[in-house]
Length: 265
Image (tube, rainbow, N blue to C red):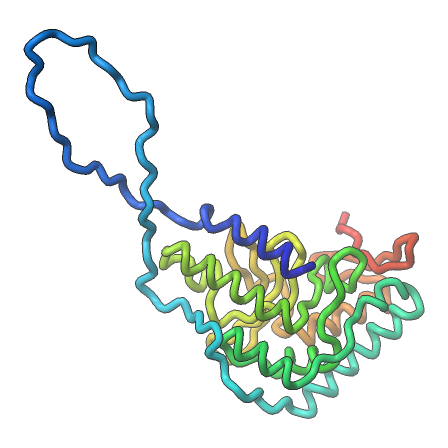
């Protein structure tokens, strides 16, 4: 499952983003000098590993389980635009990559989306709500639909679980510099690649700016369009025309009639 793969890989990053504190030397005591010479003994045991970790002194933005109870109203214009882009994508998939078309999950319910918002601790952007009402993410990784080149749309369950994993690692790192540069509690994960990275919407100012995160690096906003909807529209155009999109990737159809993205040459 998408969530399990992401949990395993991202949790391994706790040690990569954590600086350990100094070593507790402890007080030393010396025995009285022996009355007769002794053969000295030397310990080969490794020194104790420090168990303390630094603690964040800035607000991480993480509020698990404390998200707003009510979803914001989705403007009709947002719903129309999201649905229009999906119509184009689905039409192409059914005609050219039916294996991938079958991986699009049915719509989510408003109740499930609201519960996801509560669990993540941050208001979900209106366009994400419109996405989830259309499709509750995709099934698995493999040949499932991916925004170029390998970002598989998250289900309501994955949005909540991935947000928790990222906040757990961020807080456990104890490093102030990681807040906002590696992750922030007001980032909402919307797609994952199965390797620990993915796409998110930045709700620090409520704008839902689209960005991508790298679990071994930092977040970025300069490789993608401003919104998730715009990325879906660009994907639809790439499917209809043969690309390119987002870094030069082009759509290809595998022997199993599934969508894949060809690396730029």
